[in-house]
Structure formats: C-alpha cells, structure tokens
Image (cartoon, rainbow, N blue to C red; front, side, top):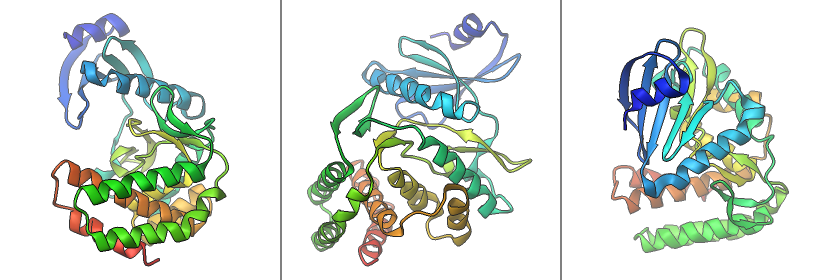
Length: 286
C-alpha cells in the first residue's frame, strides 16, 4: 500500500515523510508528515478488521464529549484507518514537576469518558459482546474466567484459593454499581499525551481495550498500572475525578492484576510474574 499517496488523495496535502511507528501489535502504524499537521495511518491485517471497526465505533462515541482530546477519524477504508495526531509526548516518557496537578487532569478526563452511558455490560467491539444486564453478573463472570485461566496456566494454587475466597467475601460490592458506562480500560501513562512545555494533558489514544462496565473498574486500572500507591498521583485523581469507594477500587485492582498475570503467562513473558503475584497477595489482604 502506498500510504503517502493515500494521504495525498484523502486530505490533499503534500507528504514529506512516512515513518513506521513502534507499538502497533494488531496493525501497522505510520506517522505521515505533511505540509500541515501529521496524520496517523493504521493498516489492519484481515483477521483484525473487527479491531478496526471497534476503534472507529469507540472514537465515534467519544467524539461529542471529548472532541479535541482524542484522535479524529479522518478516513476509514478496507483495512485502513486514518486519524489525526494528538500533539505531545506520552506521559510515560515525561517527568512533570507536579504529579498531583497532572493526575487531576487525568481524573477529569476519565470522568468525562464515564459520562457516556452503555445499555449493558460486556466487551465492546462495534457492539457489546455477550452482554449482561448488571455489574454483579458481569464481574462474577469475569473473575471466574480469570481464576480459571490462572489455574490452567499453572498459577500458585494457594494464591488461587486466597483470591477466590476474597472475591467470594467481597462480591456483594459488585451490585453497588447500577449503570454501565464506556470505559477506556487502558488509561495509563503510556496512552496519555501531554505537552511538556505547559504540562497540559492534550488527550489520550488507544481504545482497543474498551468495555462497557462500572466506571470504577476503569479508574482502578489507572491506579494499578500507573498511580500504584503514589500519594501525589492518587490525590490528583481524587481532585479531578472525585472521591470513590476504596473497597470496590481495591477489588477491581485485584481483578486487573489477575488478568495481567494471566496475559503475561499466556504469552510466555515471565519477567513480571513474581511481582504481580506479590501484588495479588497484598491485595487479598486489604
């Protein structure tokens, strides 16, 4: 595919350079530098066309609430999506002078994502797959699935038993959420784009993990993946998002760690398994 020519045809701009970018596991990602703003072109293999449809659908849902903070879909073709590029650098590659102020912006942005209601609970493509009507059923299903994977993948049986017992003890918390919303489900520092000159959050990218669920499961993933137990980051999230129940957050942090352990083990990435297992053990003691 002639990516440069595609951009010329769609946006009518001169192209100076096409650079293949890293990080595209399900698609080949190009940054196309033009006589105006850069453009992102994603080329999907046939088996991942459903991921392309998901991306377009989710960005469409976000557009009304978050235009300017997300890539704009400029063109959709057969296995090709063209997006505007958000200016800035990933937060994971920056060192802000004030983490609390930075995370307050993240909290505010995530709270705006969660204003977008969903009719049921489940994994999103361009629809909700295997939808369930309430959070209680959805989270019971998700924990059961991830615990089964943990056992099948050779996870520690004693830890498995502790997690299962903890979830059984805390499962009544699932019903505290009564309405599903759009959840980014990967809202960590690698997907947040900031301006290092002003420390303004310009937006976010990568909606490939989006789900319809309890908004706190989204906030919990940001905490578990990026904020951890950093008091400045956690205070900033509360400043921007508002106060939330800690018990449900901790239960969802446990879920995300379990899911991550299963994923790394399934792909043979063993580097972080011990530290994730330690996190799991700490979380069931909370």
